Length: 616
Image (cartoon, rainbow, N blue to C red; front, side, top):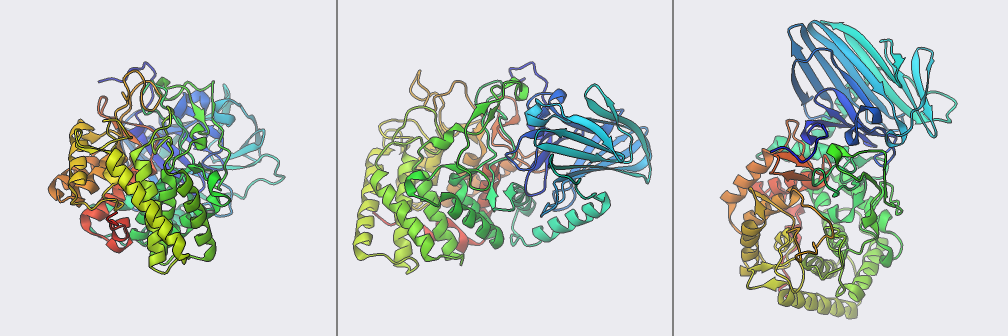
């Protein structure tokens, strides 16, 4: 089935990810860099063809005549190789971004002749400001220098680039054994000195060594190890190294509904990801990354509990005002294109549980747990004690009215449960009166959720109080220890969600129909199956003992990855293609978690191990 649009956009799964731990680029299988924000994930794009066309910024580097295409990552790295073969010969393009450190951001493209003689085409359309600003271009000592506003870009190559129609182009031939480098570097426009030259071959060796050494630290050796390490590399690539913050995705406005309005900016760090990210890092042996993420979290939410947000910028920024880019038509005509995220102002009570759960998980794993951390946790607890019984927007950031979402209440219970466990373990002292109060609140939340959140007629915990609609987030009730996995309500909820929310073998987040003419999320249209929810079902099925079914679903989900092992946010079975922002941390981290659960790997660092139901 063809998507409802006449706009010709490459499928999302046609893209590869490269990055330097500050930002990332998407490279299509046809050799075009269609997305790159510099110098950070959330900076303006210098190539934005992903959300428009070549006129909005693109770097094409490919054979003049088409041929068969093969691509892969070079071992356990983020170095992309794309190889074209035709009657004329074979050529390989290696794309990568050297891990930056204190150096200027650089994108390196290395063309190699493998055999024969291949004619190549290069077209570089630099557009600053998300495709709007055509920079002033000039030639300086053999380099191309582009400047506009705060941005400047340098392009170095032995190939002569010729300016034409607001772009720079070149036609050249590469023969067997020849190597032709292209290097793009960025710096602030007011700098008086150009960035140091980048030697493409030396940068390639450095980048290969960095990723190989990093990947070698992974402790997982169970089934599907290739999928696990590729997912972990992807999560590492979405990490902003200076702070340890991890963005949900490197893109904005890739649609959840092709041709629709469900287009959001995901280049920020969500608190809802906190515990599962920390768990994945700890269980795989990446303790340094786990500590950096935990430290980013503590800095980001510092202040008063009432001001805690659901997301932050990569350095902990709080002002993420949402606006639309009117000059970009959107991916496959899916408008509007949004920058910033208006959901930043929402109230999601579940994040308090995620944060406190993460602190406990980290503390049990030996991460630093000082009095400042305890004070922060207790401030969060006191705020939640006064507000847990209020409605909120819930985990899915609905833009409809606030409701009493069951998942939010469950995670409020998690917050008090984990604080109590910290006190009982002697990791965070408190007054006996406070402990009694928290136990009473934990019991009250538990009783309320069981009374109002579970529907016997539906056979499941529902999305919010007083309704029958389902929500895949209820699959986490056993995972977080709210009820034991052998509780009949947990088992029935898993089976009901599998029966009612699965579409073409994948799990939807919830029914977008909601209350008849008033969709629960306040938005028109539908969406694809949310991949994280399907991985949650894998873990839930395994937890209740349906191990064979869990393994079968896991295999089906792995088959949805693109040829490079990457996943977007959702999968639309109507069109058999990925939708939503790409690649999506909130898909890859549950993949890792499910693989670990199926293999019984590093269970001591799982939230299950420390979450045992309190029996309230």
